[in-house]
Image 1 (cartoon, rainbow, N blue to C red):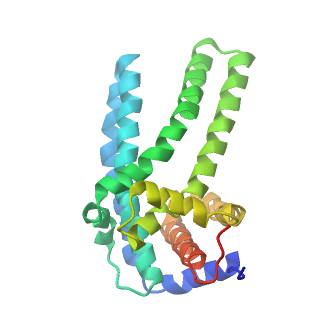
Image 2: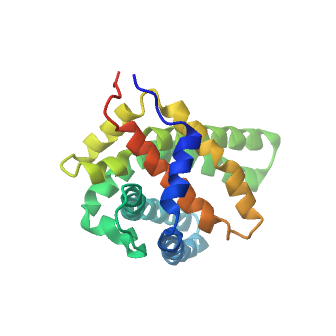
Length: 240
């Protein structure tokens, strides 16, 4: 089995690829944040009429999360294109709309459904804790939050390559993209986790800049993940 690039090597490649390209990539990030706010913010109004309003709120947000898979494809396209030395522009964030958006949403749907039960348990325990208080409900809420976080992180790592695969192999179905992501991540999940964790200090520092630091961190992060994918699919890697 060949030697994979180290975290420092991947980050070095990302920094080199970002030189002269921060403006379109940061602009794409700002566009995504603005779109998310414009789409998600109105859904909060449904919470005015509990309990049906609360159910509608979570249903709407679940649907929005699936829909935003189309923009995730656009983000993957931008950074993968930049990693390969291709020309990029901020409008590339909408690329997912002409790369089979239905497939993108089906890819997002599977892990979202797996997360649904742990997320609902956490929300129910949290609502009960806010209503009744007490150490018992607090303990259940914290335990459910821990389970939700662990499952969410595992699924994020397991299917982290699905949208890159979708772009690279358009002939594959959504199910095949997910399967191939699982195969690619065999033996690399811990390496990807450490790569994720290595950006935590950057994200924490961004909080002290009122989020402005994300204009640097977000492209840096996603460019590194694109190089991670390219490193995974290099010839010579054995799948077990």
